[in-house]
Structures are given as C-alpha cells and as structure tokens.
Length: 90
Image 1 (tube, helix red, strand yellow):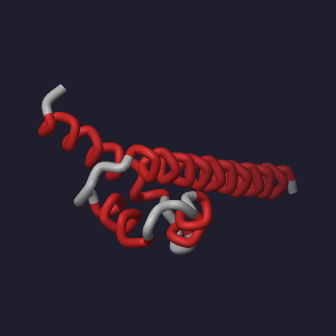
Image 2 (image 1 turned 180 degrees about the vertical axis):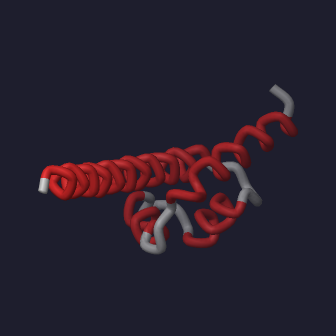
C-alpha cells in the first residue's frame, strides 16, 4: 500500500468517526491513551500524523456514541408510535 493510499484510508476513517464524537471524547481519549502525548493525540485527530492506536480508540468512542444515539432515537420512535396508537384508539 502506498503512503498516499494509507493517508487517504486514515483520513476516511477519521471522517467516518467525526459525526459521532461528542464534546467529552478528548478527555476520554487522553485517559485511554495515557502514554501518548497530548500533542500527538491532537495531531492524530487532525490527520497530521497517522497513529493507529489513536484511530482505534476514536473509532470505538464513535461507535459507542452512534449506538447510543440510535437506541435513543428508537426509544423516542417507540414512544411516539405508542402515543399515536393510544390517540387513535381514544
């Protein structure tokens, strides 16, 4: 794999995670990677350097957030559906 292709894949993975990263993910990232310098983590998040360990943790955090959002939306949909059913029955 070429360096350019590797960089593109890294940036694509970062962009996949970005929509699901909440405001407190930076603190969690630092806590989960205590051996990494804050500057290294910041540069890896920005795509300036490729760090698979940082990327892996970012993807895990993003996936957890995505699942939480999905479950919340499903619960809201369920409550709305139940309310509509009850309204129609009344």
